[in-house]
Image (tube, rainbow, N blue to C red; front, side, top):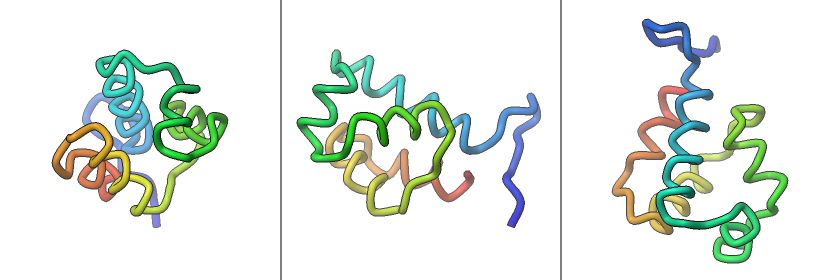
Length: 80
């Protein structure tokens, strides 16, 4: 399976990572605080935000609940 790229040349994984970072910063949380609040490792969350990794869908489901984002992250995950 190939990674999808939008019209501006940004990959779906990069869009997902940027969205994750935006939601975290909007919530006023550091990566450490997010890790404590979700139970996910800080370095793992950092790799998701940087687009280095793509998680399992269950992680995005958990983060959608944490941020009260509906299914925004799951939708981005599907594209990525």
